[in-house]
Structures are given as structure tokens and as C-alpha cells.
Image 1 (tube, helix red, strand yellow):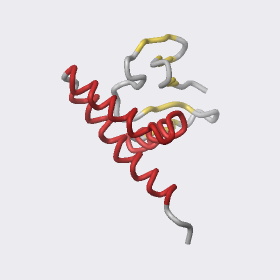
Image 2 (cartoon, rainbow, N blue to C red):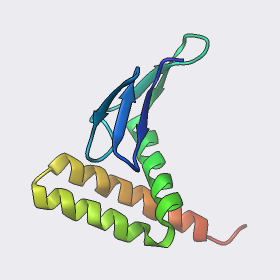
Image 3 (cartoon, rainbow, N blue to C red):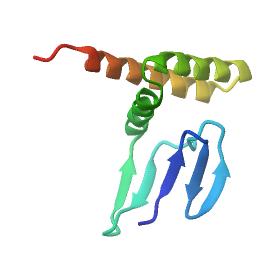
Image 4 (cartoon, rainbow, N blue to C red):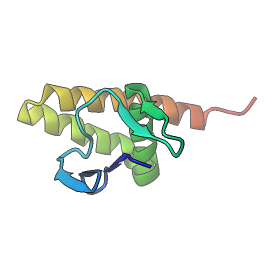
Length: 107
């Protein structure tokens, strides 16, 4: 399978064996495409990437996730990176939605 992988924890993207260091750990793109085992192209939407990031924050930071996201937003605001700031604000919305659904009482 040909694919691009992203390791958010160390901020490295590997595409077909070549590594590029990316501060945030995510390439700037709207979708990730890869070929599955059958050769079909599979796309990951921006929405799916945001959910994946929110889930990663929840898994890695748990209750401290809001603090982690706040630090990311403030960092990108400080360096003037509007795209980075917006990305983490979008992740924050998904994270809040995720945490509120986890905390909701079952039916």
C-alpha cells in the first residue's frame, strides 16, 4: 500500500520513504489520498483529519487536552500563523464535542 503517514507526537511526515520535519506534524492539505491494497484511491477529508486530531489529543492528553489545545492556539497566534491557529480552533471544537459526548449519560 502506498501512503503518507503522520506522526503528530514527533512532528514528522513520511511520504514514500522520504521524511520532512513539520512543526505541527500535519501537512497543509485538504485531504490525504492513498492507494489501498486493491489499488483504489482512498481519501481522508479535512473533517476526518480534525476528528483524528481531536481523538489523538484525547488519547494522549485526556483531561489536559483543552490546555494542550489552548497552548497550540496561542503559539500559532503568537507567531502570526493564521492557518495553524484556525486548525487548532477547529480541533478544539471537535474536542469539546467529543468530550461532551463521552460525558453524556447513556440512553
